[in-house]
Image (cartoon, rainbow, N blue to C red; front, side):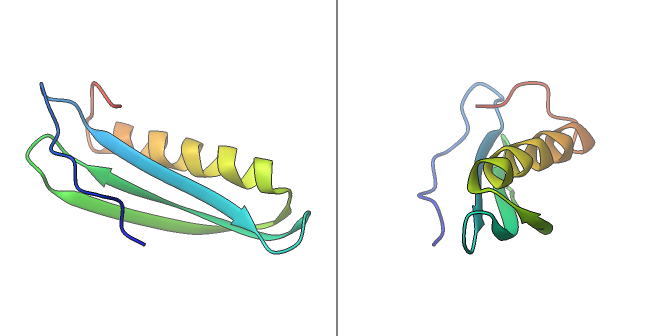
Length: 77
């Protein structure tokens, strides 16, 4: 499901993340949907191996933060 589009304000990047696993622990993956200040949308996904749901959630957030740095983001919400 695609998150609702919220236009970036004041030069902020917007990040939506989610991590999940099948079973707990179980095979896990995560994804991030990032919107740049000009409205450009970026999508990232990754499998993480076997872990708990909370670990997958945190790794999805870390993945998004790394991608924001690569994109040159200075402010993100």
